Image: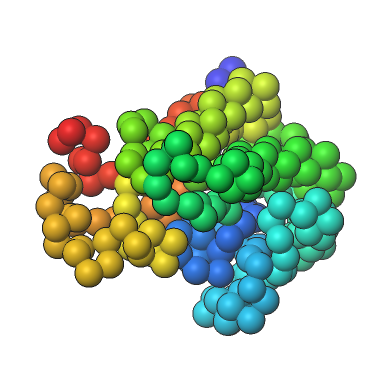
Length: 261
């Protein structure tokens, strides 16, 4: 007898009945992903450091579809409170999206402040692992019951040397290896994948294109930089049953940048 999951529902109901937690979701890619998930039928808990910004973001969703809990993504107590709130509001957790990331430095590796490097690794790699551990251990999340999904936010800078942001790329390469390792360890109960966008027009990446967007976009075969909604669409695919046989993979969303050299 086949154990293939039921096909995704047509139209806007592909994620109907599912619950997701999305970190760093008060703006940018995280917020766009939350909107896409809700549009496809999911209920979402969003997190972020800035309580005012998070509450403002939450007000933009239909009533009853989103819960917001502010806090530091790296704080174990915050992780537990988020999972408690998600379980209380929506029940078992189906999708965890690790969007939290940082890159506080720019310049060559020889000038890199090692304390900053440790902060980058803590936020971009260890915090993602901590959220997966917390979800799997939480008694109300039911994350290991089968059918759950983790989506980590990587970057094309993990694939090639990126002048000025090299250590950020190194951290994302580590995150991609973490993704593959977790995919093997947590199978078959949990699928674990990652998204690797190129430059997306958010406040986080603003310094890479501000004042020279046309020049920056010229390197992309599709002729433009990414939008948060482009990445959100990839996240919705990986969270759905359309990706039921996809785990341990990194989906590149780069407008053809790497293919074009």
